[in-house]
Image 1: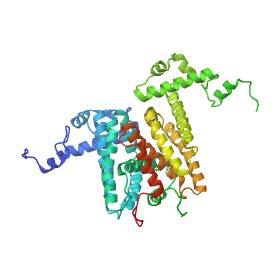
Image 2: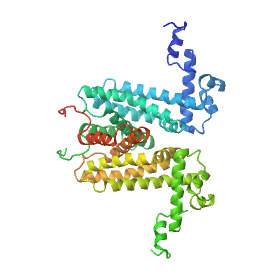
Image 3: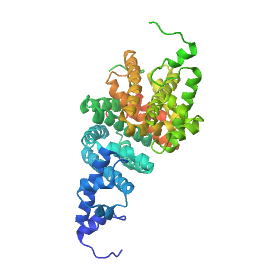
Image 4: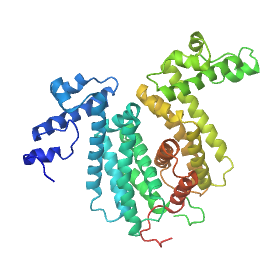
Length: 217
Length: 217
C-alpha cells in the first residue's frame, strides 16, 4: 500500500482516521482537550442545556476550533462516548492484566469499575443521556464492552476456570450488576465499602446464591 | 379517627391521597386514562418532545381535565413512574406468589420481568428519561423496588434457602442484571429465548460461575 509521506507524529494521530481527525500531534491534543471539556460540560449541565459555547469556554478554545474537529453537538457526544468507552476498557484491562484466574479478574474488574465511576461521575450521566440523543450511541458502548468481555469468558471456559454456559447472556447480566452497583454505591451514596461489595459478588461467583440441597456454609 | 362520610368507591380512590387525587371512581378512571396516555406519549415521543396536548389528545380529554389531576408535565411524569412502579411490583409479586423457594421465585420473577418489559417497552424509556428531569424520580423507583426485594431475600435467608450475605448489595446486583438482560433481550433484540436466559441465571444462582477447586460439571 502506498501512502503520501507524513511525519511519524501525524501518522500516529491519524491512525484512528475519520473526518475531523486531527492531522498533527498538537491537533490531537486540542481535540482531546475539547472532548474532556465536553465530558465535564455534558456531565454537569446535561446534554440538552449544554451549548457548544459552554464546551469551548471550558476547553479554552475558539468556537471555530471546535468546528475544525466536530460537526456539532451530536457528533461530539458520539465521539465522547466512544472515547470514554476506550478509556474505561483500557483502564479495566490494565487492572485485571495479571489476575491469576477469572474469579480474580471479576473481583479486580468490579473494584476498578466502582472506583473509576466514583472518580469519573460524568461517565454515567453522559452515557445515560446519550441514549435519548441516539440509542445507537448507548448500544454501541455496551456492545463494544460486551464483545471483549465474552471473549474473556470464552477463554476462561476453555481453561476450565468457569462453568460452561451462555457467556453472552452472562456478560449482559454481569455488566448490569456492575452498572447498578456503581450507580447505587459509587454515585448515589458511598455507605458500603467497595471491599464489601466485591466480597458479596465474589461469594456469588464462587458459591452461587441458593442453598437448596447444599450444606449451609 | 373520624372522617367525613364518603361512598365506598370514593374511599377506595382517595386512599392514595395527595393533591389532585380524584374524588370519585369516575375521576379515578379519567386520571388512569391520562396516565396511560402519558406513558404512551412519553414512551414514543420522549419526554422533552411530548407536550401536554399530545397527552390529552391520546387520552381523549380536554386540556382543562388534565390540570384537574396534574399540575404539569413534570408532575405527571413523577406520578406515572410511581404508578408504573406499583404495577410492575404487583405483577411480579403475583407471578412469584406460589413459588416453592427463592430460586424458583428468582426464575419466575426474571421471566415475568422480561415478558413485562417486552410488552411494555415504554416503561424502560420513561424511567430512564425521568432521571434527567429529576434524579429522585428514578432513584425512588429502584429504592422502592429494592426495599421489598431485600425483605424477600432476608426471609429466604431465615428459611435457609439462600446463603447468608449482604442482601442489599445482592439486590442492587440482581436488579442490575434483570435491567440489562431486559434491555438487551426484551427490548433491543429477541435473539435468545427467555428460557435460555432464565436457565443461565438459574445456574449462576445454584452453582456460581467459577470452577476453581471444584469438579467440572
